Length: 238
Image (cartoon, rainbow, N blue to C red; front, side):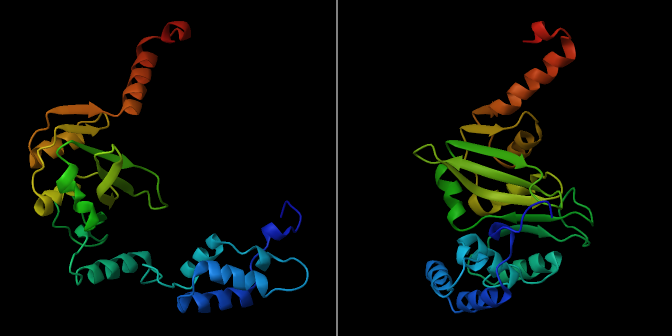
């Protein structure tokens, strides 16, 4: 609709999708599968000849091959995954509350969703959190309007390392349950947006940082908002 029937706008054939799914199930390397698909199609150029790694990932998701999706219903899928993680030697789930269940977490109600995660590698928090800890939320990452709250530290090369995350329908201090697993790092610097919620939550669970830094983007936004509210002349605003 609205364009010619170019190859780029058509779908991979069902037969090719089925053969790709079979090879993915068998554990065949993606590059080998792409070579196989392109070499096995003779004649005029078709969409199948243009198969990419992204197509293979989409087929893996479609056929649920080695995916974390345990059920077609997303709520059940997450519940089954959390139950599976509880049997692992290192359980990455810090906290979990499924929608529709009565919550044991402070400030959470029956219809709230909460999933906090820290992998074994992310316990690098213990090693680097003394230097700086950053906490911030990302909005609009999915159709459920859940928020992603991330705790991040920086290593000896000033590279950021996410060390814990929380997926929830509300911003919450529950992400700070990492103390139960990692102890008190006594951070020198705490960085976040210009709201007090995260800093207040941090000092309620950890030692007070030596300094508090605001994200420069939020500082700039706050300046612009206040200037716009108090100075009407555009020239004076600039």
